[in-house]
Length: 214
Image 1 (tube, rainbow, N blue to C red):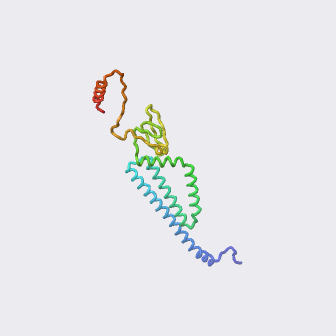
Image 2 (tube, one colour):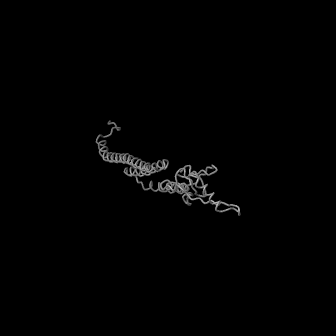
Image 3 (cartoon, rainbow, N blue to C red):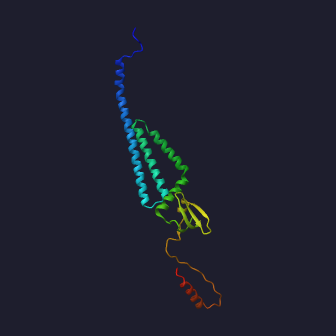
């Protein structure tokens, strides 16, 4: 009796013949997806590094350079991954919708932090003040100790450390007391009623003229 477990070789050949185009097609799609991912990742890293170099040459704060570079790299890489998955024949509409919803949720949750970050970028780029400057801003008077991505640290005259959110600082008027090399100062000097004003004026002018910084 013939063995029932034996498979007709012609059937095997037919199955292989039918499967071969599918395997080749999927293999080519997988190869294309891998190439898209590798090339896209290289381009993302190139763009991020180029942006970092440009910002570094522009003397942008190092923390901001790193943060922006990483954000740009991550955003480009997400689109590269979506393109690679799409090449495999997978519908990416749902992925894009999920990413958009997640981005919206994160944006709403970090609204305050994002506004501080945007304000920090503006402060670093336009430089209304620099480290060591004495300023009046957000109701605080003191010397700028550090300009961060999200907040600025100001040391007051009595050596208190005040951390001011960048959004609050940029929304208020900023008076830079160190921007100009010289400043005009008005001093009211009171003298007794019987004082000789001409003598008092000469004495005050002599004191002022003896000071090299005046």
